[in-house]
Image (cartoon, rainbow, N blue to C red; front, side, top):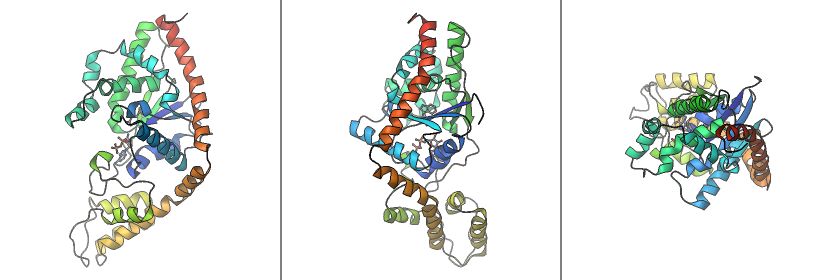
Length: 326
Ligand code: ADP
Ligand code: TRP
């Protein structure tokens, strides 16, 4: 463990988790949880920029908690909490917005992309990076692992921390570093494009066996005849198999592609088997968690307490520096 390193990241509870989320965000976070003090949270305020359905938000939040714990988040190691359990984050967001030039937000790609996709441009969507900066700065985070798409939001966060420190005194806020996972491959979806909820091409981490198996059989392939050798470049089946199979099993599939004589259906079945057994321990853990009534609530309650304690240091400092309290 690296002393003094505080790792923080958030995931939005915006729907069923898929294997892109797992390999792109959850698995790296789980690996990092023993490297420093880890703070992982469910960004339910952020999800409200697009979801206005209370029961759905509550259910998604709970499902994300269950699934993240099932995948290996260890609440003894990481502080795991709901963003809304520390509502003080909104106070810091307000303070940050008082030093945030409009241009900084107007330049953010994520906002522009969402608006160009037809998502209604509400103020929260525009101010999204400020709340994200507050999430990070409220816990004196030093390292923030995020996907490439969040890089600009981390730059905004650093800018705002520097501005606050210039205005209110050095050391008021800790300037964090981003840990951009650009080495993490983009996981393709069943149509071969980047797997994403918005493209409807996802393979969920958890679900019923039969419909899941059907989804795997729908993964894109080409019309190469069974007896012919198959292209290995840009193969969605191979890219997905690599995530689940041992290196030798993966190499064996590559060889078999080159050799010909095996149909895509067989490869899809092999991929399915590898996926199903990869997540078997997680499924079992998930069933245990679901059977243990109250476990998730207890984890989140403890997480909220620990998060609030950590946040109170920063809040006291910033309230004093701003003149909001003595
Ligand atoms: P979606 O695109 O399905 O809405 P999110 O944007 O909620 O997914 O993703 C949360 C995090 O999961 C992202 O920051 C990214 O790190 C990771 N992620 C999502 N999709 C993929 C993918 N196809 N490949 C790798 N990582 C992904
Ligand atoms: N915006 C992030 C995403 O969509 C989620 C998030 C909210 C976050 N607050 C954060 C990530 C703070 C890292 C740190 O993926």
